[in-house]
Length: 396
Image (cartoon, rainbow, N blue to C red):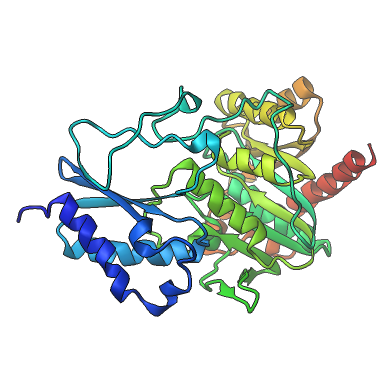
C-alpha cells in the first residue's frame, strides 16, 4: 500500500481540531491544535511529525502523543516519530532544524541554523560552557524539600540506581522523610526496583501526587511510558520533563529528595545543576579503571558548577562467594580510594557484588528494606556518612 502524501497527512491531522477529546480543549491555551501540529516530513519510508508543546504539562504531552500515534497509524504515514518542541524558543534555541534536501515536507520551509547552534547537532541548543562561572542561571528550591541530593556516575552499568534506592531507604530507616526521583527519562528503572505498579494521581491543585513504596515518595518517567516504548526526545524536551518533576509534583515535606541521575554529563545533569540548589552529589563508581575515568568527569562537572561533592560510593567492590563467603576483587581494588585521594573527597562506603542485590532489584524488594540484612547494614553506614558529610558542608 502506498504512503499518504505528507501534505495530506498534515491536513488530516490539523483537521482533527474539530473533533478533539473534550479534555484536550481545556489544555490548548493560546495555541490552537491546528497551530500545534507544525509540520510533517517523510523520507525513505520514515516520517517525522513536529508538534508544538508550549504550555502543556507532562501528562498532556503524553496524552496528545498517544492520540497522534493512533491517527498516524490510520493514515498510512510510514514509520512515524513525533517530536515535541516549543514554538516560542529562547534566543539560543531559535534556530529551526535544517531539513534534508531529499526529504519531502509539508508545513513550511526551514530556516538555516544560526551561529548560536554551531557545533551542536542540528536543531539543538548550544550548551553553555560549564567551565564559565559567569554563565547566567537562577536556582529555585522545591517547596517543602530541605535537602536535594544527587546520585551520579560518569558511565552506565555501575549500579547507580541500586545505590540511589538503597541510600534513600537507609535515610528513611533513620527516621527522615525521603523522596526519590528517577531522572533517567530514556531508561527509567525505579518503579521496577521498588515494585511499584500504582500510577501517580493528580490533586485539586493540578499537581502530580507521587506513589509511595517502603515509605518513600517516588516519581519516575516510567509511570508515564510503557516498558516497551522508547522515548525519542531531544534535549529541550528532557529538560522540560525534569523541570515538571521538580516543581509540578506534590512532594510535601521532605528532609531529603534523592535524585537518581542518568549516566554521563549531559542535558539532565545540566538541568539539575542549573535549576536546583543541591545540597551535594554522591558519585558512584566501581573499582575498574574504565569506571574511574568516567567518575572523574562527574566530579569535575559538579565542581565546575559549584555543587559540593558529598563523597564516593564504590559499588561491586568485592565479589562475595555465596558458597564460602570469601571476598575477591573481581574488578580490581582501591578505585574509590584513588578518586578520594585525587580530589580530597571521602569514601562513603563500599557495596559488594552479590546476586541477592541484583535479585532484590528485579523483584522490587530492595535489601535496605529487609531488617538485619548485611546489605542494609552497609547502606546504613553509607547513610550515616552522607548525613555527617552534609553537616560538614553546611557548616562551612
